[in-house]
Length: 309
Length: 288
Image (cartoon, rainbow over all chains, first blue to last red; front, top):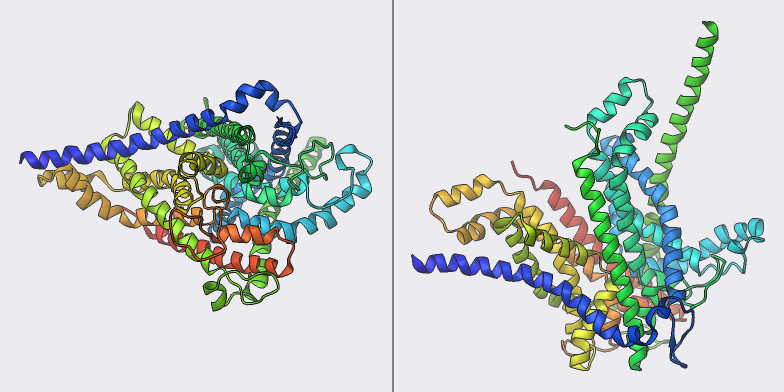
């Protein structure tokens, strides 16, 4: 009998060890990224994120062009993906009958299952020409005098990267918004409808205010994904480390520069600088994810003054 | 009074119009969201099917100008990488999930573990690649299949933890109580009752995770590196389907572009079949 209780204890310890190993893994990632980039952190300090000079020949490393590219492309993605995703989520939960919402929800989920390298391939050969001919050309003709839309419409560049990121994060924001919206108590809707509100007014005044924190969580999660996305971006953004006022111009991103230059980095300081970009990416997504989880979790409790079931 | 009535009617018309316009916009959103999916699938189908034949799956890549090249080594490489990732990720993920669901559901440490799992899930894949490079490639002094598999394995762990924990929690407590009441040890209850009950859901989670990592490219650039030849050694660079698609897609050769489309068709069939089959399987999984 004694041996049986030992088996019990050993089994518990094994599962505890596994759980501890997972926690240790995250710490190991943080420590390794930090120690490997400390050379670059010590050498360049804060100027690493404010300098625009990225020159392996002279040994100068400033990551601002990459940070700029990541921030702007992700911003374009969020700007476009958020209204569409929330619209799809409302369509799936509030408007579409079940026979329609199940298959459409399934198809939107499929978008998330497509590997990013395939988005990149489709981006290069199908989407970029489309962007050039049907988005950039007309914008260039009408609004070309604005710095934002100046420069030759190349197709490849910041706009294409932002748009492809938007497509990639739509399923993420949609999935979370859908879950959040369907968790809004039915009484909330019935109350508004009983007051004579139209369907849209019910959604606008009774459903969305209740769900907005959770949807914000979904948006931040999508943002985190957009910031870390590598393959599709590097294939369509143009990979040029320049800061341009035009969204038509080729640009670069933090994840893309790691993918492109990592295996070419022969000098210690070069490699260290690239790993520091990785560390920055990690920290940003880590904070964003924590924030997103907090928002999504806080909706589960419901807002103050909301109807509870 | 009449005036008031007229005002009300006018107001009502505007409200109803807004209602219809907004609802139509929502429908449009759904249509817009599906256009890229349809475009991607049709283009990959149409462009990829031409080159997809038995030779494509069994041959090595051929130099530019020669026909008959394939992605056989990439396919085998991807299978090897996914196998290594599974060996690392599945036990660690399932055991952690068992700890969270069966031994310690609430408290500080389980919350930390869940938070860590969520954080791991959100780390950009390229950063996981850097980590595997630093920890495995530098000490081994060579890019390797093992480093690539380890990177994918790290990405697999949080997917399996969160999915499996959910599946284990769906097993009703009365099942566990029945086992304990019969005098079974706790580990016996877990191994003989809880896991078999939830096994379909767990397998589904694992399959979805594998579908997700098998299309990953970014971490492999820094770890598996790619290989033009057959290699099954885990201490050497190895080819992978997504890596080959990437290299062919950014090459200047028309012929290689066609191969990239065929490779994508192969990869997407692999990924979609795994995820569709496992999603349909979960739909039927219900506990009373």
